[in-house]
Length: 475
Image (cartoon, rainbow, N blue to C red; front, side):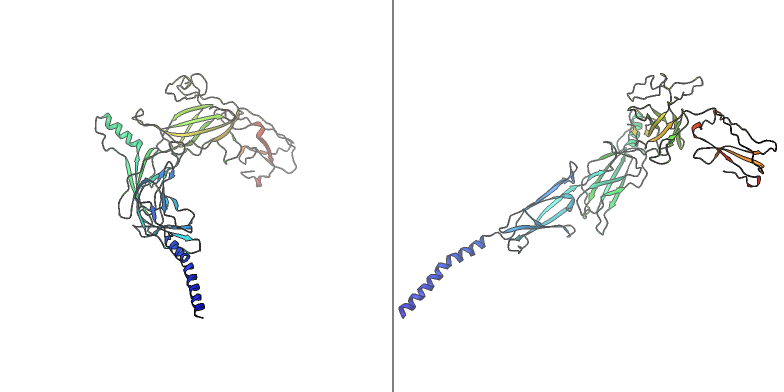
């Protein structure tokens, strides 16, 4: 019995000895597993612009991989406001690239944790600290062409920047007026140092947390060229460097062009004039206007000329003949030839061009040129107006028509109207007394050259028969 007992004990002892190496190996393997991430990047100070080549600059977050991890969570907080800036869950890799515009200005702390294969999560890593110093980058005003031409006289300045700034300072310089003052000082041999026509504005972020990225200039800007900078102030009161400057031009569109149809999309209005006068509302500070007239269906302007402003609320011009007896076409090559010089009559007045029948479009834009220093201060060309459209139709300068009708019993008077088709105001009106012995009446009218607005194809005869007690002022 003792030998059997002894043998059984040895067997169990051997069994335990055989199992022990496997258990020890598993325990040691678990000790060797990486169970908590370690923050590797970013570190130190990151100095950058908020945008690089019109794309937000980025920060790469990187941490040591964890065994058996299927994904990671990343937490970023501001060391200035102590608020969470970023929480990104279920990141497949052990890196994450984040635009600086989604991060906070100043110090930040980063933590990461692993989501494990068995459904559990590791502890959060030790925090990793870094500094972000990102200068704001201007993105507006937007506008036409590389000059960023805007017709808005109170333009909106916009920029990109990281989160968490206290506010932004904007510095706006009137380049045109500054250049004029510099030119004036230079002409008088005076110093030009410190000459600047400028304004500064401070825009504060909403304490509730609304991030501001734009500001509408409160002053109405004169037509001209402007340069703007912006810089951020963090919650400690420290400013970033000034951004790179952004230049833009202000040039409002002329409005209310005539002749033109009343509503967009309507057929071009018929002028019944072959020497029409073009008119538009004046633009503040404009010294001239660039007028472009083009016949519909052609590729080149029929007439183009720089017209001086007349100082009135409404500006106007006609298509003027050149010394070549062709419509003036200015070529802007700084050489004035006969095609650009107006033809004058014996009274010294410009001679208008008689337009061939057809449909025309015309545009106008305002121009600012320095009166005193046109050679040193760059001219500013504003935005082109919307097109004005019209149909030139030769006027009828003489027209006679007759109308007859049979007398009606009991009628004492006839009220006769001549009305243009589609209108209600009479061109001609006459009340004719009925003669007892007459059974018809005849009348005629001639349109004089001073009132050449009617065309035979659009005239409507209209006869109204009324007694004297029912005569009215309109049909």
